[in-house]
Image 1 (cartoon, rainbow, N blue to C red):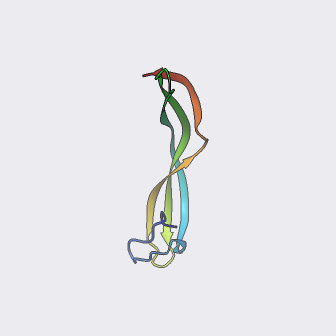
Image 2: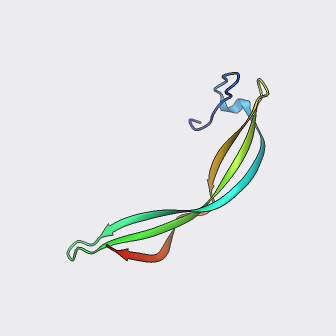
Image 3: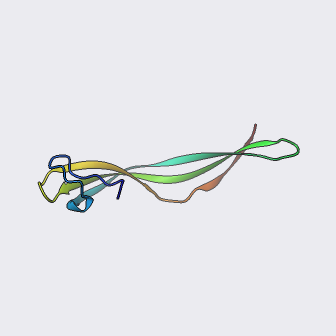
Length: 90
């Protein structure tokens, strides 16, 4: 509920007063996460890469109190992080 936004025209802060009018997928992109690990005795350091696919959408909302419409961008995860086959030694 903290991430939801209310109407900017009438100042209504309640997110349940907004109505979703439409949703459009803009594009898909791949997000990467690098994890740094090291082994203790021989001091080898690794950088492992994980990735996941996310979808960016534009959502059109309408305020139920004053009728104003606005557009917000939302990012939705399509998969979990999975390990990439490449490892780099630092």
